[in-house]
Length: 269
Image 1 (tube, rainbow, N blue to C red):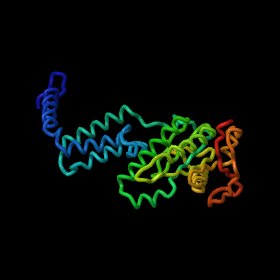
Image 2: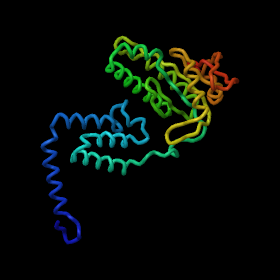
Image 3: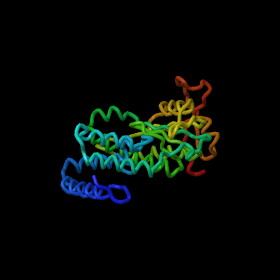
Image 4: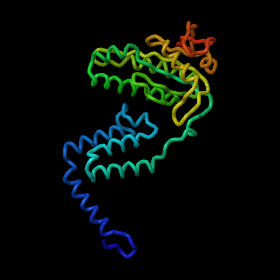
């Protein structure tokens, strides 16, 4: 093997690059290659809103795994180029650190589609995905607009956090209204929402602990179109902006003295 005067292998690298170019020219338009590339792009950040990348701490790791599975038993230039692209991506897009998010008290929101499983079993996967994409899009836009952050998707629901309890309550109601306006195959989804304010432990981008469990339990107790909030959430909000009604609440794992309210916004306040 010959080398350039500085000890590098530039002639060989140039030939390799030309060979790769010829290979790409031959394979670029093949249906299998195009479909594989499209599938991988959907999993990248900014692609399909229901993709793996959105909820993974490192979505690119999952994409690398998909690339590695492509004809893994044979050498593959396309696979190697794909993995190289992921390496570059990871080097310029470092993992978000927990310090990027306020680690003080937060209001936790859980949402859940009521009777979704019954409908999903009756219709095909295409309709289910269409509905979930529409619900995700509406929910995420409203939550972000109210200063919240979606922590993770839970299939037919999500978990989000807010620094402002009042904004969290408004976001829950606005999300519920937006979702109820969606229609897929004659089905109009209804959300139930639960809110609780506390100081959960933050691990990466996720939150863990008793306060998270309480918020999930409160959400599970809500009816269709209903927003339930703990007393702790209302104490941190301007209660004059909301109408509250005491809700009988008992749930395994929740404190016996936990007070929960059904909450409605006051648009005249």
